[in-house]
Length: 181
Length: 185
Image (cartoon, rainbow over all chains, first blue to last red):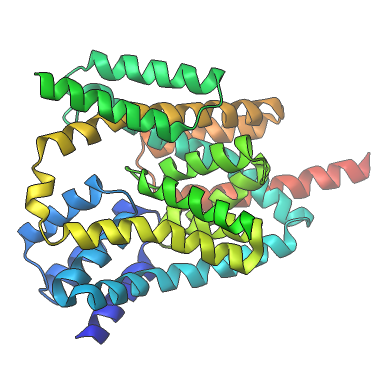
């Protein structure tokens, strides 16, 4: 079963182009439908936990499924399986990049990619901004979040403060507010 | 040795506090390694993100491997990878034992909700710096590509892989064309 666990997550790791959410249907296919290692309810719980904890969702799922099936060994094997394909791929691309980045055609490609990357980051940022201010269903409005957003943004623009400190402060403020209410 | 230890510490902390997807950690990496430590220049950081996004798997992991490689070759890549994987691996291993208690805790929920506006602000800060640099280059085609990509990704739900491929092709042919133009002059 450990072999199967490994192979399942190798295929998830190899096919999940385009980041976390793209991997979810693949994980569901392997874990819930093909091998029935988890029920759909457990899988839904897994998604909410993966979202509530730091780290990529595919890696988190691998660790979680592995842990439930075969404790620590399972977690290790599933996580490694999930990592290996993307590592091979990124090392290969990285090798080409670091070797040929001074060539004109490579410079051209990279110059074309940069605006798209800025756009992708902006798009992810806007989604998180709207989620923070208007909630998941876009039906509420949080003035506290808006103030925190503006404050953190201004602090970061004006001063080089470690953003992690600001993240923790922002989380802490919400904890204080919700325990007062 | 000191450099590797510093790399490990930074990646570990970033990974530990990065909720909400690969672009958050990538924004934080830019803030640390480009703005603060100046170990990597901004253009290279953007190239690294582009490669990380073009590979399968998590952008956070791919990005950290490439950043690690840039800083300390294969050993740097390995250090960076381990530092990135360790926090989520340990946290999930522990939580998987009593997960319902964790996910229904109101304080945990409040904390996570509280992170969101700050995360949005961190990304906004990075986007403003990056956007200004694209505009400063005064290459109209790239400014148009930036706006267009944003529109199709955000409003059109177009697959980012598609946007990457098209942008790479446009970049390739545009650089060929302008190289030829220069020769003729």
